[in-house]
Image 1 (cartoon, one colour):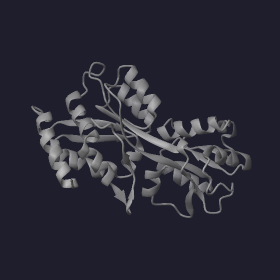
Image 2 (cartoon, helix red, strand yellow):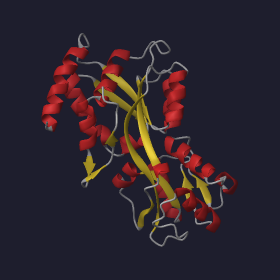
Image 3 (tube, rainbow, N blue to C red):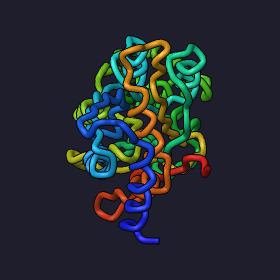
Length: 273
């Protein structure tokens, strides 16, 4: 079945799902930055609007801040990439249901000169250990984002506390992924980034992917409607329609079809109903 056919089939199904929802319904998504910075929403949201008439607005911040915003009832849907924190959000009653949506991976990028000599390594913990041992320089987001949470977990698994070298070879920017990449490139430091942001990043200069392919670099995204029992202002009906569309064959195919320079940025993996 081609893409147009899938979208058409989904439109028929969602026509019944939307029922009495007015065409001018609007929802707010609290989102991780990688999905916004990569251009994915620019690809997905017009398709969803054409199918349902629901307008989607997006606030793109680090995962930790997105979760806090949703806990403050500022949003109808949460779309982030830190599964443990997402499950805690649902367990605390703020979300109705967490569903796997899509995945990609993290990579470590660095200058072509590769001062820590980690290029081509398949073991991310060993690569981080070499960066620390050589003082090769590492720029961290330091912002409680999903990427930052993952980075700290990888350092811990390598038995290293990089924050003890904060301000030395380990620099915390407190910024988003794009700003951290720019800072890291300016310092000649290594940076861990999600692959989608790296592909879409326009200021690579002499930087290349140095470490990739380790299973530990897997990057899962989830989608969660905000629970109206906790947040009465949440537009739960429209939020569920959005989550259902993203995880439907139409939404999953739309995610898979998004590419930059022929490269697929996200890989759908929602459970099949």
